[in-house]
Image 1 (cartoon, helix red, strand yellow):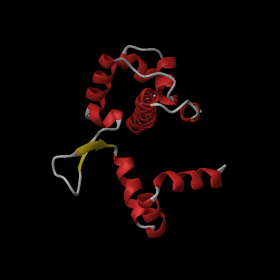
Image 2: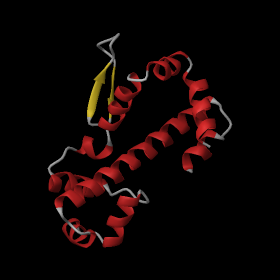
Image 3: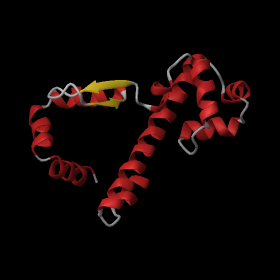
Length: 146
């Protein structure tokens, strides 16, 4: 819902920068909550057990998993150490992807984002349409799924 509210703002350069920032925060929170819950479940901890290990309440763990709250930086470090994962993995910046055209340019992407691109490439018409006119193609997809 937050993403849709952001898109409806008046489009000027300040708003676009703000929108990009908010969308990145939403993406980080979405990836974190999915990965955090998977790590907890795979490790066999209940929310209450994990809360005690992290020195937070069961409600906090539940809120982290639902994406309602983000842990503090200190708690993120404890989580990463407990599950023996990198902080970059927790926040979805676990892969550094270098541009095919320019080795000096790269971005950090989540594994899930890389898998999305790989899957899109299997569908030539859709992939080429996104490359040629991404805005129009996305609008058509959104219209179709509503």
